[in-house]
Amino acid sequence: MKRDERAVLFEREVLSPDACLLHFRSESLFRSFLPGQFTMVRLPETSGLLLRRPYSFCDVRAEHSSFSLLVKEVGEGTRALARLAIGTSVDCLGPLGSSFRPPPNDRTPLIVAGGVGIAPFLAFCRMLARRGQRAIVLLGGRTSADLYLRGEFLSLGMDVRSATEDGSFGHEGLVTDVLAEVLNGKTSFELYSCGPTPMLVRVARMARERGLPHQVSLERRMGCGMGCCLGCVVFVHSTNEYVRCCTEGPVYDADEVAWERDPYPL
Image: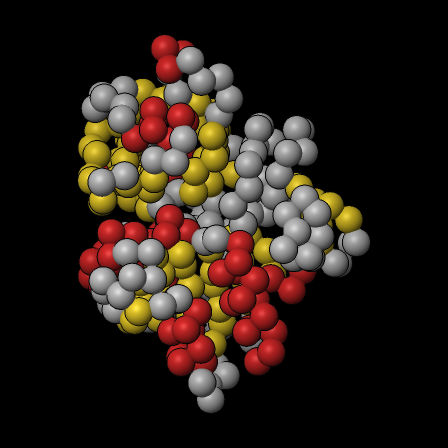
């Protein structure tokens, strides 16, 4: 059930010079949460920012009545959120959107994430660990500073492999290079991905060539998060029409997405 409630920032965990993990206390947002869902955050009126902004739930800890958001400073809204003072309360609407489906027991979950695209997968891996499933997690970034939350995935028992474009950590090159090595000759995977669109397209193509199931989480600009503004539409093949990423997504079967269509042509 969607709720609109106040959440209080109680901890900021610095991950890199321009990224942090914000921990909020909330009475009820976490109770009906599923990995892959997101919340729309409205900052205090003093920020001057009127519209809510979408953020994936990075982690939810029911025992602490808290949830966490991964924030990278890329614009005015993310900068204002990342720099909130401890003790500040924000308005949060959620949980919103669709969620990841766990794989059957005979398939290994294989996660491909670029930069802040790793955000929705920490809670997903926590759920997999509770089910006794071990995922292979491929992290990609321009430099080692972009490989967020690597230690957290290792602590959950996940098989973590990394790639950086500058070679500062792990494989020198793209995370899809590592994916090609993992997929070589093996077919018992279910793929999950989130990150830059060119990366998602390559992952979708590789999964399709091998006949592997692939769930993708799309990041889109959202004005309302309620399906009203139509600012986040995605063209899908099953109905041959645009659907709303905030309500029908953000998690889709990758073959459903018409990657070549407007408004996000490649």
